[in-house]
Length: 306
Ligand SMILES: [Zn+2]
Image (cartoon, rainbow, N blue to C red; front, side, top):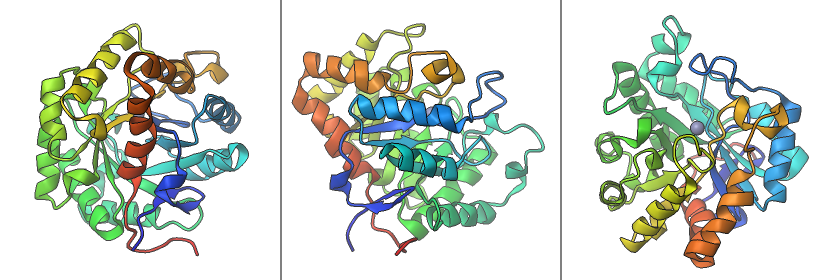
């Protein structure tokens, strides 16, 4: 069966994705970021338009269940802008769900059926299954979500996208998922640049897992030069074919449409041209086009629309 990428508007051939922003949020609501929520459709369309103008053809939205996830909203954005949008199902790390949140009480089987239904949804399907880990450890809730995501991966074929806390535990997460039957090549590890250690990530990448860097534009924590150096080091170690890049604009205050910055288009408008100048167009094309198409593609167990 042919490998496809599942977008909110339906399945597309991996070669159709073009330049891809592998990690963003167009809607996000969490008690961990009071005052920094965003859920406005008009603002989402405005940000997505800017991203398209800056050269992106595809974007992956990593907002999971219970945190403002809005697949119909993503569908509207995609229709309004022409941007391919890959939506996520799944759940974040435990800290985002307060005591008493209904998701905490669900069984692994219940979560798995929910994730499978989201990937198979006819109106606005999800194309990735998100899970989350805490800082250097997994909580019982997170283990339950890992098990549910693995089950949903077996059922649907969709890749598993992982929030790592401050870039920790990449290899261990790949090992945990391998024990649950998820191959490393179906695992995308986010936020690895929070721990900019090329030696550690090269070991993780050697398993075949995808290494995602998604912190450009966060000058208050570290300059973009740190991420460029990390990309250079990883490419030097032969990992250029495992890298993905995203902007992860996960706060209202990071969106220009809400009066903040640097905006959803920063990755493409500012970081990508600099990457091309400093490390070459070939590596940039590999990361934004070839790697993204490969990482997001899967053989679907069923087709939600035909
Ligand atoms: Zn994110």
